[in-house]
Image (cartoon, rainbow, N blue to C red; front, side, top):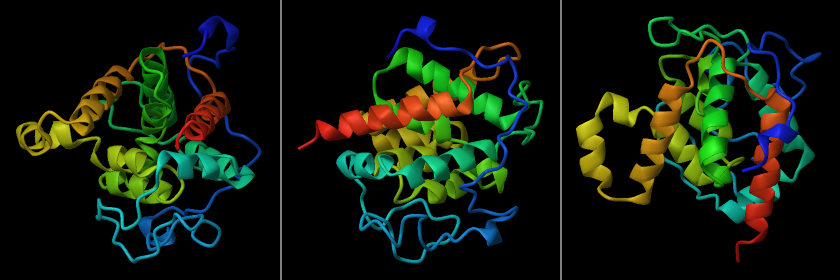
Length: 226
């Protein structure tokens, strides 16, 4: 965690976009995104190469934190993830569940809660990117978002994105299935941050600041792995 006093905050509600999502890969529907391979499939040996449907919640190739850190250091990674984040700008969510409405504003709030509570950059990444799929398909956004980061972020982060609603949809079954595991504890924390990131007045960093903090921390954490 860093001293928040040293960080400039964005306006209360994010309603701006960069000159263009230069790393934009996906289109407006699931059919426009290639779920059979990741963005880095041609340049990274850690990417999944087997065909998968949009509803698959499993990975065929594990990506370790060390491997994800190497990928995070690539300039194309920032460009790609930045584009996916900005695609959430202006995506409206049902007011009944999300009074803050804007999906990007919500994601940045969830990131702030994670950043304030933990030093774990993989949890920061899961918080920041958990709703990426909403720019394509809100109903199936867990699986879609997981597919977007497959081969780019670690398998732990991908799994958390894929399963971040499990404690909402089937809490008892999820707890029985995961038992007293680290995965369950990760899900509990992510669920709490997800519920907490629904303020109309929260201060948040802008997307580029949140992304830079996350990537820098992932690179540093990965460098410490054997």
